[in-house]
Length: 159
Length: 104
Image (spheres, each protein chain N blue to C red):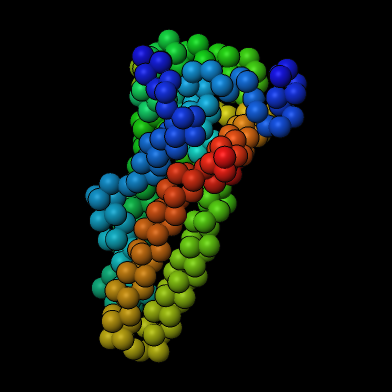
């Protein structure tokens, strides 16, 4: 069985192995759907807390805690079961890092922007801005993941 | 060419047998890869992974960790810093070789 690939050039074997490994960096659609919902929940926090009936924070705190625990649990199970533990540090992926940083900046700007709008009494505009911010952050996360896959395929992952 | 002379230009004879190069390339992109996953990804037999991983471990290129998930025993592999350096050197040498061959 070992000799099946004997006539395959060594560099092609390497590229093939990397392609197979890169497939492990792909998240299922269900993950992205849940992530999108979580994103809208978090980005809209200033809006949700401005409503007096849920403004006491207990409901939001619980929702966030459940989402965070579910996320950590999913990540742990995936790492244990998949047979591949990818590097967690974003600095290990040179082309994904700038996209991740840009996404972080968009997230912070979006969150504080929505917060500022709510505090100046412009909740209607904040509602319009919320999906824009959520889509931008979502896109940055998808792009970061794609860049990680490309880095793995190209053998650019740093130890 | 002796092993010592080979290593000077990046070529590493340890990585030239069986699926060792592909196994190292697989682990270069990950932190840990388990035995069964490596076997399936490289499409080789259990004995091939076992034999070549031992050689790589003896060469100091591979770290092996034994553990379990639930009741199933698992063996995990990781490339050591020496393994990373050897793989990088060997791949550079192969790339240079391909360039030289393309030029002729």
